[in-house]
Image (tube, rainbow, N blue to C red):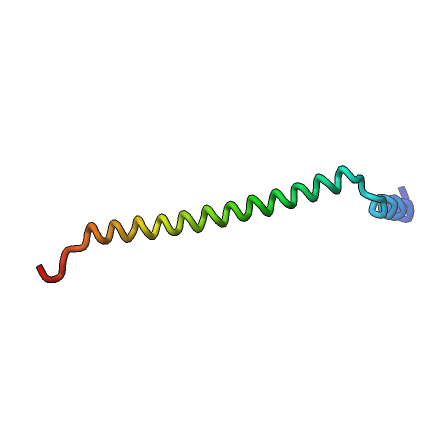
Length: 68
């Protein structure tokens, strides 16, 4: 296939009107990805808080009073 014919074929493909079902699916998937990213961020924040609380609890259990 000549380069000119290939360019015309690609241009026709790129210029095609997208299928409505495909557009809807991409929109849904993008929304789902945003939801999952938000969930990941929430879980990370919970884990950090839990790790800090656990660390503080361990320190308080290990610490001896300075003036006994």
